[in-house]
Amino acid sequence: MMSYDRDNSRNGRRQRKSFKRSRARGWGMGLYRNTRDGKVGGVCAGLADHFDIAHWVMRLMWVGGFLFTGTLALWAYLAAWILLSPQPSRYGGAAQGDDTDDSVAMEYDERYHDYRPRRAFRYPEPGTVRLNRARERLDDALRRVENMESYVTSRRFNLDREFSRL
Image (cartoon, rainbow, N blue to C red):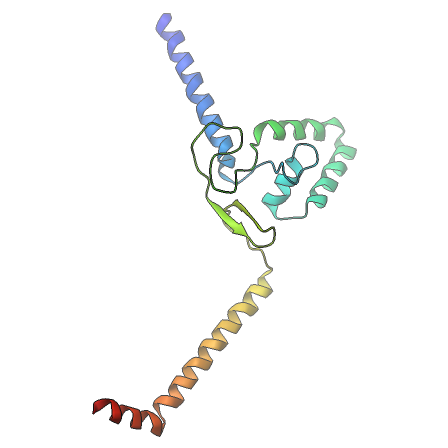
């Protein structure tokens, strides 16, 4: 009986540690409360940062959810407030208020001029802008290759090569 209680208490501690560690890491998805830009608890601002939409849009969605579902949206907000940890500090340390030493990969976000948790598959510009930028780089590379070809086939290249042989 005594060993059974001891095993259950160890499992409970392990689960609490695992819960705290997952919460501090943003549940593996980069989900955090944005307490700096948030109005009440930072839940809407954090979700807006995660989905890369404007904060006011997420707040409007919450108000719409509250109007259509009643207190269910309020309970969901409170649950998210408890389950989401505050956004990590800008230097990649543990989340604010947590005593864990797990670091979160951070990247500099040009639009917000601040460090944010690194996210996979998050693109700040639309696809057309990225495609045009790639096209410009390819055109620049093609221009340099054309310049190199015209130099190699010119008389000046032959003259420079003869001088280098001396």
